[in-house]
Amino acid sequence: MTVTRVSGHTGTVDAVVRVPGSKSVANRALMCAALVPGPGESRVIGVPGGDDCSAMVDALARCGAIRGESVVGGSFPGSGGRFDAGIAGTTSRFLTAGAALSESAIIIDGGEPLRRRPMADLHDALRQLGATVEQVEGSPRGYLPVSVAGGRLVGGTVAVRGDVSSQFISALMLVAPRLTNGLAIDVVGELVSRPYVEMTAAVMRDFGASVDVGTSRISVAPVPYAPCEYTVEPDFSSAAFPIMALAISSGRVEVPGLAAALLQGDSFILDVARAMGISVATRGNDIIAERTGDAVLSPVHVNLADASDLVPAVAVACTAIRGRSTITGVGFIRSKESDRLGDLAAELNAAGASVTVDADGLTIDGGTSLHPGRPYATHHDHRLAMAFSLTAAGGREVRIADAEVVTKSWPSFFRDMTGVLGAAEVLH
Image (cartoon, rainbow, N blue to C red; front, top):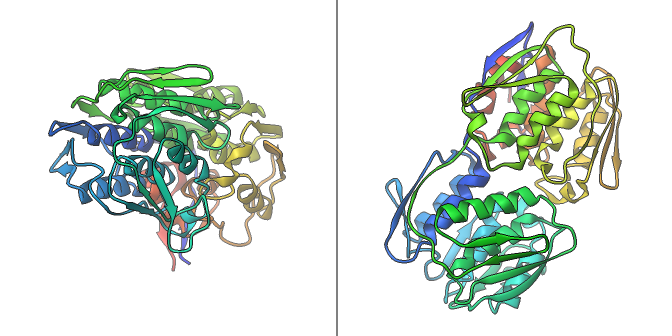
């Protein structure tokens, strides 16, 4: 175990924080580019350097779909082999669906945290379409590693639960243009994180696909992808952290380029900030968030079903706001990289907060200063590591165990956030 000490920022915050490109957008664009038929070449500009996108790029490179700065169509998924997604859930699910286009078996695997995440709904959907999905190396049904093969799947109609993970639906959508008859996905029950499905459709359309997202059915025509040059927009999920730091410290944070990001449901963080009493303004393509020293913030009651990655940052911010806040609609995030409700609440309560885990979210009685007696545990979750660090914005030193997990989405997080959190160093 490593421990990182974040010194704490003293005084008023005045910082410019450049966030990485959206890994969610980038991985969708990389998949579309790789699934272009024939030798057509695309460029995906602004792919962030985190573990999730690196795992996707490595997988595409293994089958010859990466050539310099270009993504070459017609090579993915290749003919056999093994794709290791590390701890990247999105990457593993997209690669699993992509592997079903191969006539030869491809093994999809990942690190131990990823092996514990549920995949059964996606595996079952691929079986409905005629793919062969088999457990390997003693893995239990519905978990990695698995062997996947399908070859020339014809498509048709498949039913998928909507209340487990939108990533399963996005994975099926991404491969659908390659299916002879296209694909109709009937969503069973409520579709959580619908903006991520809309994001998938938008990226697919930029590569020439024909997609219709309805209330309970998503239809993808068998129209092939076409090469293009695609620029990845800045990541709102990452921007939540410097913005929410203003619930803990007064001052000003500027996030360049963020106002030009149009595809992400996590832009809801701007509405959350305003509801708390943090002012948010746009200057050109930049977002500027401010809180004056005499501003009294208000507790919030927010449904984050469509923006669940915001939960850790919002929850930590709410611990600093006097009064009761609630976060609802997110019971499904207990199967993310961590149990993002139970683990988050346990760590905050151990530091003196009052956080209750509800059936579909959290209740936070805020206004208590946190005094952790031990380093915050990150539970293999990059968003927990970043969220716990926010308490340093108030000038108090914070220690975080295994903080390097931030490399999953934002490898330079602590360096980029120095003006908000103070300096960070690894102690041991």
